Length: 358
Image (cartoon, rainbow, N blue to C red; front, side, top):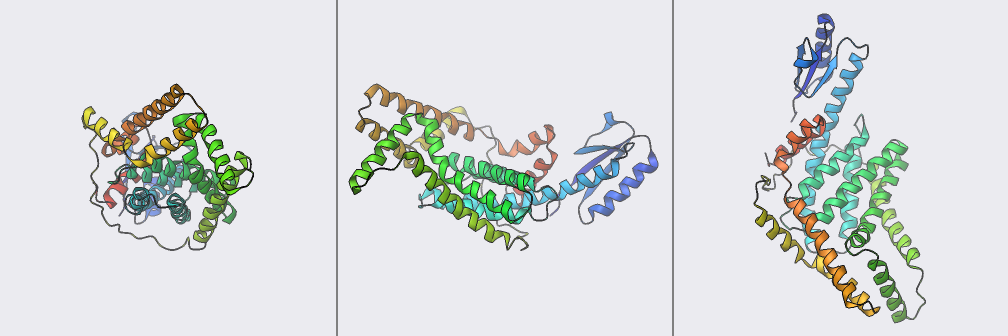
């Protein structure tokens, strides 16, 4: 499957334009590429444009075609990653499988490593994570916000590692470490966002009570968190290093359609609020909140403080859930195109087609 790229050539040198046209067809090979020639930039309508009078026109054309191939791969692996999230991920998050987030982070790291191998700009793998996070919003099992944030942030951290260290085993292992560390620490960070500094008080109370129950002195809370985060990071780093050894394996060219429905974005506000309140009723939201409130009450916090913490958590969570419900995924490619992100728009359209959503 190949998406169409429209390159607009402008400038007064007809011979140079025709030479670039021939070069485009030769370099693109099996890809479907349409090249338009116009005399003025004002007439240009397409994905991108190149000034043929520039001495860098040929290199610009090669770069655009390389980006086209990269984003075609982004579309393929974005569909694979998104399909994994709405299938296996839905089971993991819906059933609250222990260390399920760690397993999903390892799978995502392996996919990003496989995807990045032939790319001209491997930092573009971040768009795979963003596509996967968007597709995760279609999960029929609910519980979308935390996984969506995790997928996007982990992809961004992995791409930053590749930008910093290049393309080698150390870079992908470090990227995997960052992904595992985020998978572990995100829950704490989100709870801190919801309840603020009350979370620190609650964690200290729980740590002291647990240490007293088993008859040992409680280690510093910061040390416990560092060891816990580092252990998760090392596990994903090992999994990513193993994926590095198999990165030349070809990905599947065809993906099973999941029969999901892309929201049209015209859902009424009352429907959006109903869906958001349903998410608030899930144990994955209220159970951690109840534990934190219980620890605060055990520590002697006043009732007014407990009520404030609960209201703050529910308000922030409700706002986030409403924003996710209002996403118009079917219009996302067009919006990206208007913003000048023709590559991600191309990848998103291709991912939707591969998943049978368009």
